Amino acid sequence: MMNQAATPRHETPVLAGRSNDTLWPVRIGALGVQAVKGVLYRLYERRLMAEVTGRLIPQHVGLIQDGHRRYARNAGFADMRQGYNLGASKTEEVLGWCVQLGIPRVTLWWLSTENLARDPEDVAAVLGVIEDKLAEWISGGLAERLGMRIRPIGKLELLPTSAIAALRGAEAATRQHGGLTVNVGVGYGGRQEIVDAVKGYLWESFARGDSPEAVIDRFSAEVVDKYLYTYDSPDPDLIIRTSGELRLSGFMLWQSAFSEYYFCDVYWPDFRKIDFLRAIRSYQQRTRRFGK
Image 1 (tube, rainbow, N blue to C red):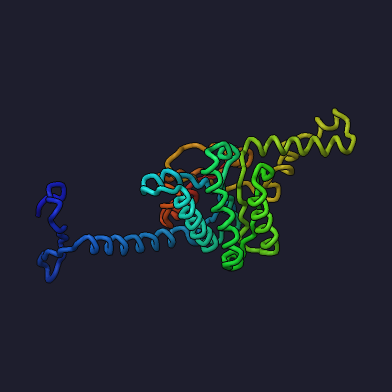
Image 2: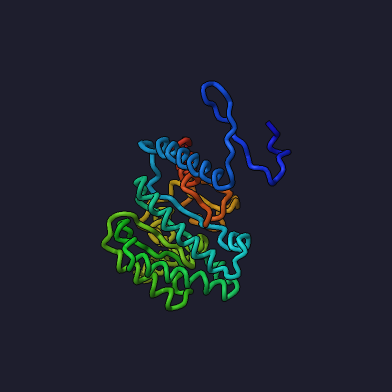
């Protein structure tokens, strides 16, 4: 059979099959190749699901959803908003996968404090998708189906009033849900979070009239925990970043001291369930010592 590398582009690929111990050629076109890939993908997905089910599941997953703009450029989209829309739809899928596995808490990073300095049209596009998607999650029933409790985190006062209203409205509408808790980072930065936590502690201490000595003596890592945006969340067990970048870029800097990291080469809109399950499997294969 002709080597695949030497096969002219116009020729149809040939697979070898076996019938009555005799090899027979099977010709498949492009659609057939895609069908075979689809079958193999589903089989592999089932295998991964079987591997991770019944084993230790992370209780808090952080998601650095990177690569929307590069995906849009590679796809030839004239409007970057198309990439953000696809990324938002992917987020819905991933949240469903989390519920399927029994993961109770997820932190999404939709927009950093540094991102706010980008081109105003780009920032407006991201915020527009966030506002539309949050409203859709509430009105369309996704939040109720997943039992989703939405908690905005970040320097929200830096956002336009419409974005703040959308985030606070989603928080109020889902406050009683008891399923998946979703921290939504908009205008979020890990350094700013630590600064704000220390400021919060100092302001409260000064308001009580505490002496400088008492303020210093009482200050500890546990105190900082209480003033973080995520004060009521356990630290993330696993942080997944897409797009191939190998850095945190300021995501949950305080909380991620003992988190496990998983970096994936695909852009966020292309993130597949097998990528997600591989990340979970990788987490399960690690031994966590927490510095001990």
